[in-house]
Image (cartoon, rainbow, N blue to C red; front, side):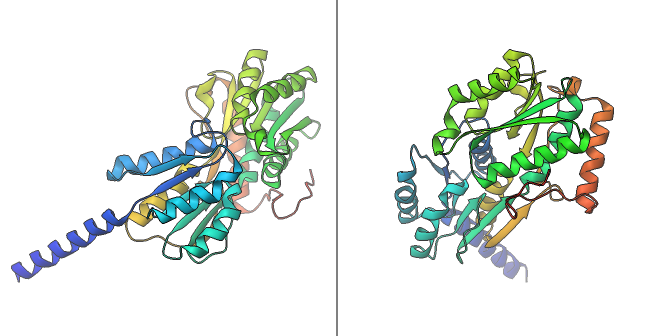
Length: 330
């Protein structure tokens, strides 16, 4: 009996080892660079956490233009990488083509749904997190004017903006909100000169709190806000520490968790398909508090935000989902 148990344990261990050895994870970043302090970097952090915990390395690639998407994806699939995770909705077109040609490869895409049997899609309720930071912006504002700087003008970014406006007006119905998008092409994610110009213009119009959802462009937004003596709000990753005392909070979008889960599930032989939607209830979105912004957020402000968070989770408050209905009602 003892010999049989040892044999079974050895077989199980060998199977697990073989399974892990078969996993060759890869991650493909979106435009803006791996170290954009925001979306891409959150994805990289999730992959890095997986590597640190398992010892399994991952392959990565940063595109410099849209034309590289399908070519890069095919190369990784052809080379046997599995699973392959793509950070960003713009990978959807290439993935829809390539996934069909490599049915034995597991793919995961973040921020878009691709309906293929070997694809996992993860999207977020960014409007819920944006609502909370919008409330915080209105509560912190002394001028009665707050603003938003988006990256590329697409429904996803309009979803951030709409949630932000809804939260700001919930906290102060008389608040003035200035909204500006950086552009209509992918360059909008990495145009720091324009990001700085937009922010300066919003400051000149009275804004004293600015929320950015603009990828690499957002780095300049937060820098200009700090230089102008107003408050910025970060996005995706916790950006509070970029300008301590000048970043009110950051709207967290747990891209890192989506990447980590995809890699880890594959490593365990438990990779699943279909799509999931992560919001406040699941911890997929939220806002950040730490030593860098503690002095900016009073206990009363935080209590108000937490009450709103509870109301959204319970269903008492419904935040408009711009991705489902492209008419922001606020």
